[in-house]
Length: 445
Image (cartoon, rainbow, N blue to C red; front, side, top):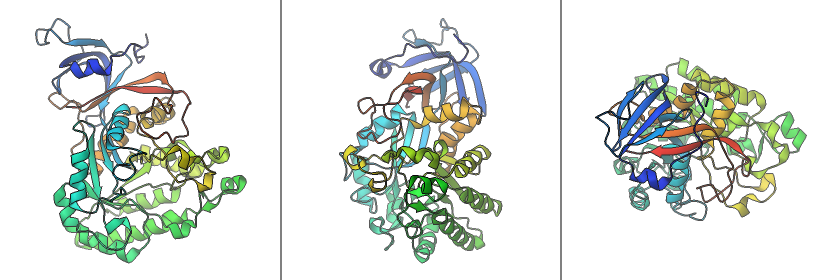
């Protein structure tokens, strides 16, 4: 067996639930927090990391007699993944996704925390909705965090009572919808500034997009798809950056996160804003790192996304920006959509795709196996930095820390099907296609 080849035998979920003490032998530990990438033995007990050593003897007096010992050669143990923003069908569209199925999909993909956007029905624009979601979330992990809406009904008109939402326990403020009114944007930032929470903005103009469904360029022309110009992102991104700079004159440094950056010019604007010292972070959807307009020739409605997939140059710029840290985080933007709603012509389909169960293995195969990124870069973008963007303590892989971890086999083959996926929806272009890499276990304290 090679150094990084996992054994094919796995432990059932029911067995995991009974475990109180587990020894993972010769597992590859990846932790961006400590810049660690090494093969060690790790002892986990009662939700705590007890020891990390080059070798821990099975006969050690410290190990309880009931300790389960696993040969974990080739497996990867790393901090749990953190998703900045995804969509929950519950409340309002439980047939697409429930909070329970969202949690199951997140756990199957290695996520220990998922922040949901406020576009539920009713939207998360009042403290009682925050409380209701918390009450209806199954008492298990992964942890479901909520973004609070900036505007009532996320309609981009009237501001919400942000102070009440903050007191209710939201993770940050953001509609998750496109920016249209710059005067309202300025007021949102001014009003939200005192609360010290991250503000999520999507720099996108539906007016400039003009119902386009593919990024404007040679491929949109070749495939006969309505073009969406890069300007629909960059014009609003530049304007938002200027609003932030104007508000930051007094040094208050409001923290803004730019969602769904998808163009090469958008990357340039983010880099320039950071060089100016503005307190901003940025993320890109995982799909836009793997695919481009070149993939649209299949007319698969599951490739209809918003923002649309970028050109090959956009994709290359995003990949480089993640490696350089200009783009801080990779977001999943998990968007469950019913089969019948997606089974229509490309441009008529609602945009979006699921991804919580697929992102880690597909990103690993594309960027780690090819040598484009280091494993630390991938985990920094999926775990450490998303937590920091949310102003949360990141998951840690160190002695004494809670077991907020994922055990991942990077070569195990599997096929996502409507039956095997934990999500209630299966709108993904990778459906019924064999992929390599699967999460074996997501640990929670």
